[in-house]
Image (cartoon, rainbow over all chains, first blue to last red; front, side, top):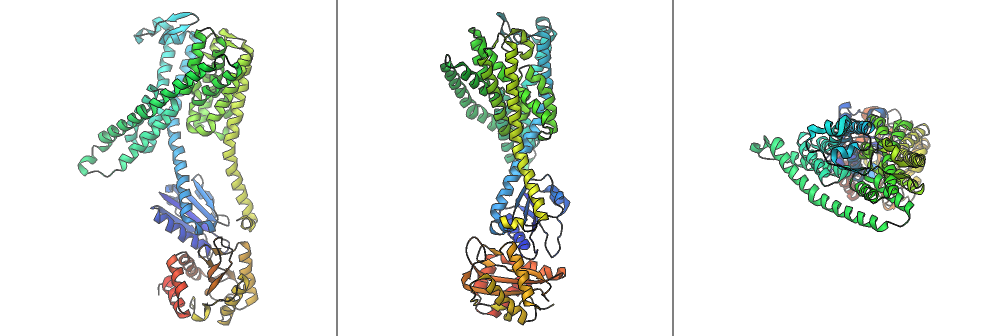
Length: 477
Length: 150
């Protein structure tokens, strides 16, 4: 790892240099490269811009304001007092490692997300157009199933799709096919970001297997990280020269894919299947109890993994209820599934600065996807920042599900969102449930994302304050 | 350039038990050797630095220091205290006291020597050899060898 550091203290003749020496020692002991800029009385020799650019983390051990700190902007930063660096340099180096890793992890996830977003947008819009033009029956016409009492056979010869399901069916088929690549692309490009080309095959295969075992996008995240990690390890392995040539093309993809695949199917797939069975039984046991509570639970599940295994259990529960004539559960499930993309779309409009460019673009299409009950529209946001986004989508979906049940709304359609509004009972109250749910989601995601942001802003302001009031920091140090 | 440290600037039996008294007794040695012109001014400057944040660091070390107009040459006065003196470090009193005097507006050549001295301070081997030094001459030899490479 490469670290750059700045040390500085009020007098600039003792602690500045002691901290520098301590950091250099600790970095060397931990096997890292470090360049320290001592902003002291002996004259600062500036760290080269190239070293800053190459640095994985920046450490400021300073009791006075770091001069020209804008040179370090955008780097993962660990900031502390000069004394801390002298007394506990190894701890500080460990913090720098953690900061660098956190930054790297975000970078990997964002790479996967940025490649996935066009698939979400293109596939999602085509599916929505299919519903718009063909109504709710378009899905069973292509993939088989029952809609409004009519049972359709799945198309087996896809060249016949226009004759059997119309142009809407074709749009739906193309969109659904693009959508099937969503998790493989996410996992593949996370692994690609980590290990370069040798990571691509194990990553994509991990994503395909996540689809097969029904692990959803969270399974894809895990699979991509696993694949990338294994490929990274193999890339760094020292091998005999004779093998080196075929390592990146044959050996690494082969071994990494085998290992990742094994883990995905056996270690991740089986527990997911078991958990789904358990959840289904639990939900069945709840039938007949408090309807609003059931709506809340189904909503929380819909908003948790956005098309993943838990979401599927709730959706399947809704389908089963619909088949037995209970339309209210289906309405609650659909309302809850529409909320996550809509809530995030609203959040990107209300607080642009909390989202990346790619996320804001995803937000534009998320309106249409959410309105069409394509919960996957929220995945780009959740994959990039799961810890802040998933609680928000769960809360909003839970509220919408509970309200839909409380209002006794019903849906005779198992999918389609606003395009099947004619099959919704009490449509205005159902809309109200969705609007309240999406407002909850948007408010919560803005709050959670702002917490992280504001903390760093305040730190910066506090520093500026310290710089103009020398000695203030020392009172708290 | 005058020597960074001389045997007259070393006190291996600091009797003072308080930070200010210890600093004053070492500073008097600086004045006696002509390194500091105005004792009170110098002590005031050291106190001002100490007031910003105590200069004690973990490992039993105190490093009172300042840049002062009362200082003629960059100089180190060294004191050793058997019972230890509280210097504001979290892990206990300081046994090795380094009083570093730097002239106000001293050239970077001067400062580079002090920077090198500061860098040596964090090394346990340097501290240990000073803890075991039998007489002031030995201290001077250790400092010159470690800091100046002489």
